[in-house]
Amino acid sequence: MFKALLLLILSSATCVHAQLLKDPEEAFLKAQQSGKEVLLIFSGSDWCIPCIQFNNKILADTAFQHFAQDKLVLLEADFPQRRRIPASLRSQYESLAAEFNPEGAFPRIVLLTPGKKLLAQVPFIQQSPPDFIAEVQQMLK
Image (cartoon, rainbow, N blue to C red; front, side, top):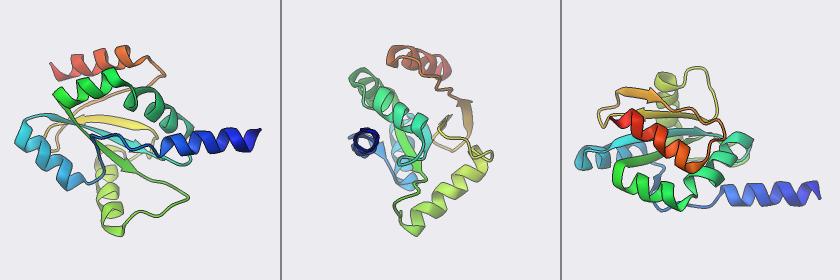
């Protein structure tokens, strides 16, 4: 039973969301071109239970996806334990983490300008998608 549940959680964590970018250069370029802020999510997609919950509860939510499409560029800096990511991406993620997540907290969600200036840290405390959207909207003002 436990193995089946764990497999279900891990397989759902690998769902790809259409607008969740993995490449920081692409994300910040898109943000500069669109004038949108960047929501940077530090994640441990295959080991961090709160990260998986954020992915399933917030990132997979249709209302959040519509909100983000209009207002944000979503960037995930993933630090998985069981799969490898390209060295070039890992290096970029480590650079972002050194600046915006030196404590190594997961998930850590930060709101950045297209020029990589920190606007706010966005807490995820298991709030509903509408509550999370409302928090981010307040930070965008």
